[in-house]
Image (cartoon, rainbow, N blue to C red):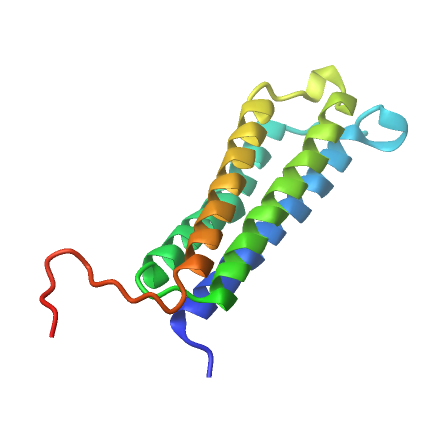
Length: 149
């Protein structure tokens, strides 16, 4: 049976994969055929805010919640899932950064570059949390303030 920690970590992975795929397709749409942009009028700022608030932010938050659930006893399986979340986030943002220069100037959103670098940093942080969870497996430490039996 799957426990809560595994379910939350898999949900985090799913949201981060969803973010990468949606952002990649959105940037591809903005680039358009022959790098000339789309044929219709779009407002990329709203879509960017929506994509981040629906998938990236919850995915990062769920990775942190998973760390909070297993921080005292650790787990190799959950640590590996958390680390994969960070790796997917980093690889996806590197792909997005490589596509940004091809966006036509009229559709370029100035906030996309700092957002991408911030998500790269979040990916590195998620990998670190996953490594900590893997290292702590089998080492039970009591939370501050609890008495030992």
